[in-house]
Image 1 (cartoon, helix red, strand yellow):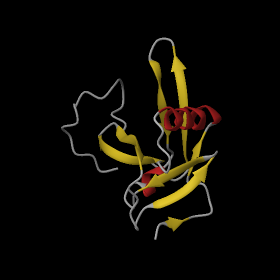
Image 2 (cartoon, helix red, strand yellow):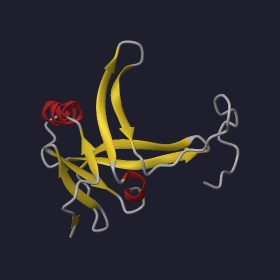
Image 3 (cartoon, helix red, strand yellow):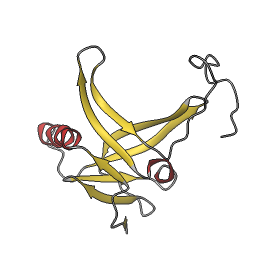
Length: 124
């Protein structure tokens, strides 16, 4: 049985929940949830992925945030505690979801952007 939690680990903004619900309705995906997961990382931070999913496992954490069922696997949950997901429509960068997670630590190389291309090993 899925683990239900009372506290909102991840918060979806109104714009994000509307975007998810619009996609679910448009694609007729009854019974699906928003799965949020760690999709890798490197020295410059943690990358997150999202998918619409109806294949839930016993070790998944599931909860409701702003009217959307959210599912997180047992590894990703530690990186997503306190995260906020928003949907933005930026004229320059386009539309998409943005995850802001205080639990995901990034690596600071000092001045400028990361130039390692993910090849370094960071101990943060």
